[in-house]
Image (cartoon, rainbow, N blue to C red; front, side, top):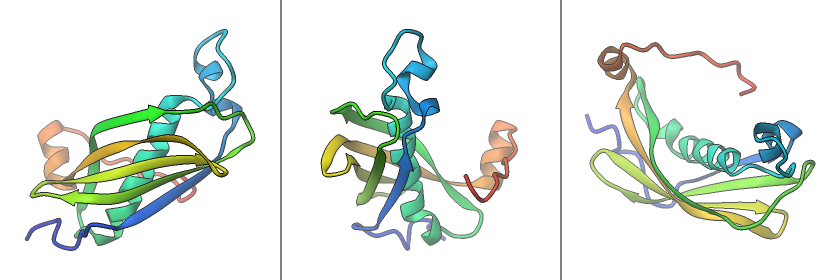
Length: 139
């Protein structure tokens, strides 16, 4: 069975968040501004990408991040709503490429591309001697 059989170009998903103080560069690095941190933007873009294809993967398969190329275009202060949008633009034998955008209202604050590999969880856990962590539904 090919785990990517049901993944098609154009599949999309969004992750919407409100920027909190814990998501700012100032939270992680002393004396830096309290604006949305680039690693948090990338995390939210990756989460949107995973969500775009997760329902279409066979049971027992998940996608994992492999490559990220992102530009952070503008600062976003605490309290603003950010939408991370991901759209499938390429599917190959073992991975999926996404076009990414992040928006603060009508202002684009980030863009780029992201590649995710698709893995069988049981085989992956055996190979790397790791166990899957179950997250609460609100994560």
